Length: 165
Figure 1 (cartoon, rainbow, N blue to C red):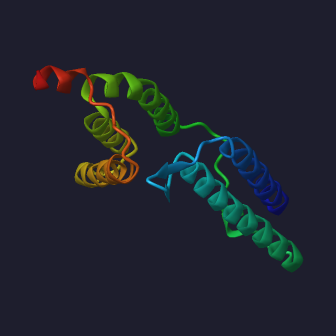
Figure 2 (cartoon, rainbow, N blue to C red):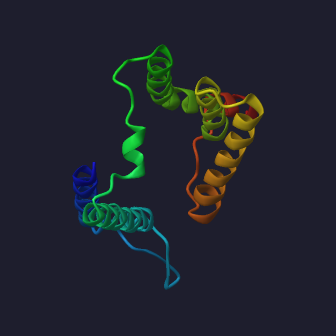
């Protein structure tokens, strides 16, 4: 398990390098001479997080190898059997991904994300009230980050457009 974590950490480094290479082609966002977070910000932030996680996995695994200890997560290796709940969860996530884009085209991003995330959490055995609260928090955060900070218009959907005239 430790060797796998070392390779996982190295793969995170490689992935962050790829993100840096492709992100460097994104244009700078300059308004009235002031440099603002633009298209490069999110990929670069993601790459830095991946580098941090890669360092964590590599250092943790090397330390555990030196101490000749098995990591705690080695005890959490899943069973070899396939359960109905596991298959249901995988199918629910795949269906959620497939239906997300058509749903946001119809309902709009905010309402569509709310419906999909609530439905997925309920299927994944999160209590209904918690799933609603988490979905509202998720949608509000996405709206604040992308709609307010980055000024990216989120899709409104044909249903909302119908009511607006």
